[in-house]
Length: 418
Ligand SMILES: [Zn+2]
Image (cartoon, rainbow, N blue to C red; front, top):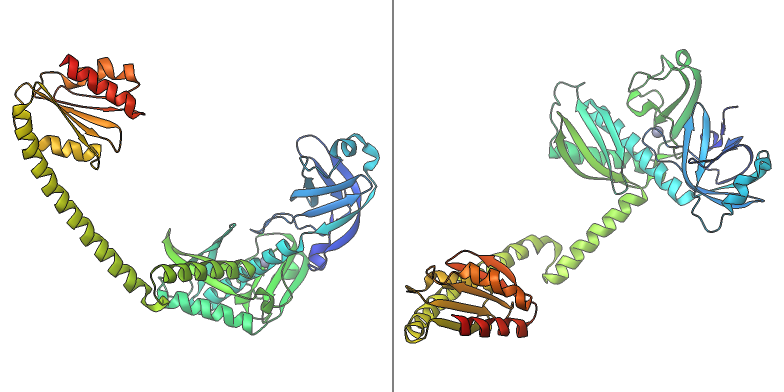
């Protein structure tokens, strides 16, 4: 099979083209091979293009484009409602048919901005600090590059100052609207000798991309991606953060429309916080600190009050229990099971009596004794009758109910039985 003609390489701004189907791949990988294509296959960290291929058979929606041995495969969605896929696949004669290719341009341009943003930032790190880009990742919400400081001995470690300067200088390259040039070489020897940031790793069909001055090695690398004509089209390069990573500095950043979307989201977040804290952005952190301080004081005050309340309740219960029968039951509107556990610990000597403390808020009860009767056994043997759950040990147990009526029945049972 002939290699696919790469129109995206000759002109990355082509959004439509007429092509001829040279082969149809059926089975698990449903894909078309065309004589020429505008769809960039995934490679060099840039994701594959998407779009549509329309022919007499209908419209196919692309889900992935990849390259193998110079041939570009256009994988299409087989779950698409618009495409009569079974009809297409059954007709072998589809090979040779002419089709219209339609590129998802917004997505592609966004990828071109991001990809070129990476070129610019890498060039700046190399130029300023001798930092070499050793790893690149283009994610959905951000990109990362791993910068290794190895060429200028005065720069060994990333600092905030270096980080911000690199951001500024890369945006300056955008404002200067420098040309982005692409040169093709069939063989390695032809490209060698030209200024380049990295040694060539490929042998033939080399594309050399230069951002700005073609004689400046900092901006020139071999790359198979798609690039805008000028750096101005990148629009914006925003560095989000840096981290130490395996002896290198990992820079998280974005470029173009994606960077703008992020700035918009962050500004929205800050505005929302400013409204919530009745603050201006510059005093926001101070406001939040003050609010947190106040909350922490309130929590402490609440805790102290609760402890005092529980202590008072425990002595009150102690008195009531000494006058009660063998089972003492007390219901609480406001306290939770956790509070009742704390209250139980404060109770005086139980001397063979059973205390049943109930949280109406949580339909939960705490049983406490000195071991006689066996609290855990009471719950284990009987709670399930009223759809109760729980358990515990001899001196303390817990039972939870989904309905208050069930819990009341269980209490009634305990009062009769113990
Ligand atoms: Zn590139």
